[in-house]
Image: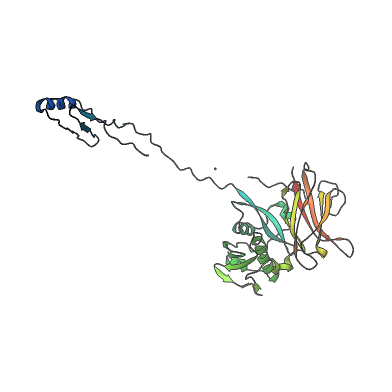
Amino acid sequence: MTSVDDRLRRAATSLGQDGEPIPPFKGLRQRARRRRMMTGAAVVVVAVAGTFAVAATTRSDHRVNVQQPPPASTTLPSATTTTAAPKPPVTDRSAVSVYLATNEHVVAAGRAVDGAATPEAAVRALLAGPVGVVEEDLGFTSAIPAGTVLHSVSVDGPVATVDLSEQFESGGGSLSMQMRVAQVVFTVTQFAPIDHVRFRLDGTPVSTIGGEGLMVDNVGRADFADVTPLILVESPTPGQTVGAPLHVRGMSNTFEATVNYTLTDSNSPNVCSACAEGVIAEGFTTATAGSGTWGTFEFDIAFDAERAGPVLLSVYEISARDGMRINETTIPLEVQP
C-alpha cells in the first residue's frame, strides 16, 4: 500500500418639512393699540396669510397678545444611500459518503460537497465516480454508467425518490444492475430518516430495470445483502485525515456479532495489517446483531494525540474454525495531531 497522500482541503430618507421661516408680525400691536384709542372698543385681529404661518391672537380689555409659532427648521437631514452587497460565493463545504464498488461489494468513500450535506449533493458526488490516488490503488470502481445525470431527489418521510436519466439503465448484466442500484440506495439512506428508495428515469416512475427485471421500487439496504460485505466500515473512509480518538462505525453480520479491529503504523518496516509489528491499538466490539442478522457497530480507538503520519485501520472477524482473520476491511488513513 502506498503512503496516503494528504489531499483533503479544509476550507457574513425622510426629508424634514421644507418651509420658509414664519415672518415676524411687526406693527400688529401698534395697529391694535391705535384701533383701541380710536374706537374705545376691543378688537380681535387675526391676520394670517400663507401656507406655513399661523398666528393665534387673544383679546382682553387692555391689550392684544399675539403668539408666533417658532420658525420651522430649514436644515435637511443628510441623505443616505444604501447599496446591497453582492452575495458571496458558497465557501462552506460538508462531508458526505458515496458508495462505490470493489470486489463485487459496495464500499464507502468520503467526499466534500459545496453547501449542506443533502441526498441530492451526495448522489451528484456519486455520479462523478472514484477520485484520487488512494481510491485508484484500492481498486474502487462504479457500476453506474458514465453520462448518467441526476434530475432530482425528493424526500417524503422515510422514502426518497431519485430521478435519473435513462443512461442509468444502459448496459451491464444482473450483477452490474444490482450493484449500481445498491450504490444509489446506500448513498441516499445514509441520511436519516430515509430507509427506502424509489426510482424514476427521466421523470417516469419505474418498478424494475434491466433485462432481468431487477426490482427498484421502494427498496432498502436489506434488499442488497448479496453485494454488501459482512463488515462494512462507513466511517472513516479511505484517505481521510483523522485524529485521536479515532471514531469508527459501520454495519456487520458476524458470528456472535463480534467485530475486531487493529490500528497499525504504516511507517513500520514490513508493515502488514495482520502483523504484530507496528500495532498502535487493537481490540474488539459487539455489534447490535449478528449470526445471520445485520447489525451496526460504533467504537472509538484511543492513541497518542501527538501522533502523525499514515496508519492502517483493519476491521475483521476471527474465524471460529481456525482463528484466522476473515471478512477483513483495511482502510488507509492519515493521522494529524
